[in-house]
Length: 225
Image 1 (cartoon, rainbow, N blue to C red):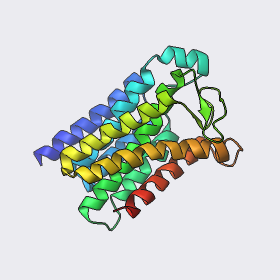
Image 2 (image 1 turned 90 degrees about the vertical axis):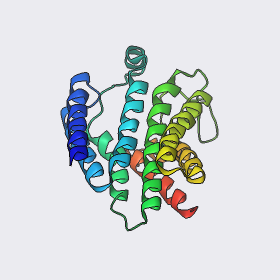
Image 3 (image 1 turned 45 degrees about the vertical axis):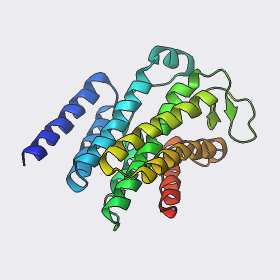
């Protein structure tokens, strides 16, 4: 009971902080609030900690040299409800899948790792001067749909591995932790692949790309266990 109260207070504090510092707009913050409550109530503390880690890591990457990214590339640090749903709904739904506890927490972590890798690589990879399209590896403009760089790939793997380390601390399963890191990293590249093809041709929009890339990641992650 005391633990539940503590985590509820933490979730509410994060809600007010996200609104105050502008990491999410009011609708995005409200969606994140309910998402956090559901994840904690039906998953538990370890699920919520993994999810909050994604928010914290993504925020740090987003505000890094924010004015430069805003002025040069028109990037906005404030996320909306579409961003919350496209990257948060799949991890939440995984909690309700009829799977064993180990598999459920593993797939949840893969989904969060993929979301983290995609966000961080996009926010920090944009500083690379050598950016290429994932299709044909042709030179691309930083920030373009499907554009990748060595710098972005590095940060994608680093951020995905950060979630994998947290997963290991809770699960003590080294093999699955490595899979979390790998499939989280691949999730970012699936996002880039969809961006360079379907999104660039107008068949999908950014939030749909995020959503589908995470689904592909967890399907492949599930097939390997």
